[in-house]
Length: 471
Ligand SMILES: Cc1ncc(COP(=O)(O)O)c(C=O)c1O
Image (cartoon, rainbow, N blue to C red; front, side, top):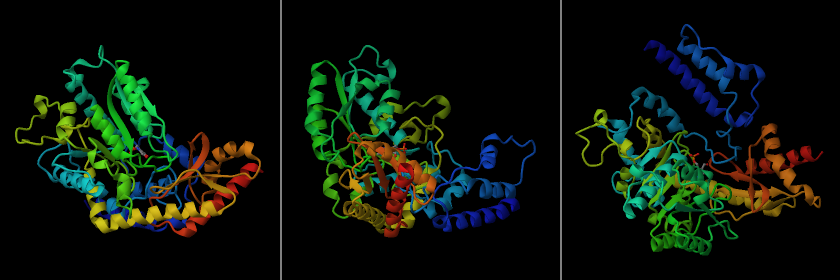
């Protein structure tokens, strides 16, 4: 273990230096040809290399090429910087290296506490075993919808796992036009068919139009289809909008639908000052997806699905062959009975360390601070002649675009080209999308190290990128 001790000490130094110096680095840079060739084309060494050499390679070949999300001027997609506590314990999780499928060991037991903490933070009712950690919200969504599918089949007197979906009225799911693509992917994977995912229009604030939802459900039921699930968003990826959850919960209750909430990014926005009213109804969800690897900054590979009735997902997934039987696992059983993963990593340790380190107060501060940054950027955009805001700010995402004076015909082309040009310049990172039929820019705030000056730099970088493109 002397090798590990020596190389480990060097790795800690390299990691701490890297994290301490992130602000001074370019946010992102293209990979140099030589390094690309090394990264993609290297041969498996015949003779094993030393741990010291591995630390050196990571420092020289990899740390110069981050995705960018550790930098305070990274505003792309929904990717946070890593929490230092999560970084700290990642190698300890690997040292224990349990499979958190279940069983009587620290890895599996800690997950119960972490899931309970997440439910408490999101204001979601919790009973022991009512949720599990996942790779991310995409997997959380699969678990939620598979549970919904099986419940609907049971209500209709059959078993979707045993029979498959053939010969049954198609099950229909309802998602707003702003719903995340993982909802449709899950529906496809579960054999529901993308044509049975109804896209519900949104209102002027990019929230699901509940009258339209009711009308679509009535129409499908009349046509002999089987409406079974409505998936609302608590924080859409484009604008951060929170759907009218209470009203949608009422519709779901009236029509006997499973109520899923995608709070992957935004569920913790409920902790922001004055935000609770907008989230009313989240506690009525049958399943809630919430990603600790987003707003909380748990290092990537940590999502969570919370379940009102854990029996629903156990009914959708539990399969315990003789070689996995554990007669001591009375009551709750194993986590692997509640989702598709059998061998499961020790995600709980990174999530536990991150939340313990911040404490509830620190988490509330983080959310408030990032929400404030979004409002500040929105105010700067409204005060500028060359930018316009495209959506109200409800969480920590700002949707906007650059205005090209009176050369309006090219506004869409220009805004489509801006994100890549900003990224190439290396001083800020933002990504684009389409909002209300328009090419848009969006900035997502998750990093408490971002300052107001960083916001000015973002707008200036966007202007300069726009000028470069227009030149
Ligand atoms: C609102 C929303 N839902 C779902 C997802 C998918 O989450 P994951 O990438 O963790 O699978 C994302 C990812 O950004 C998201 O923003």
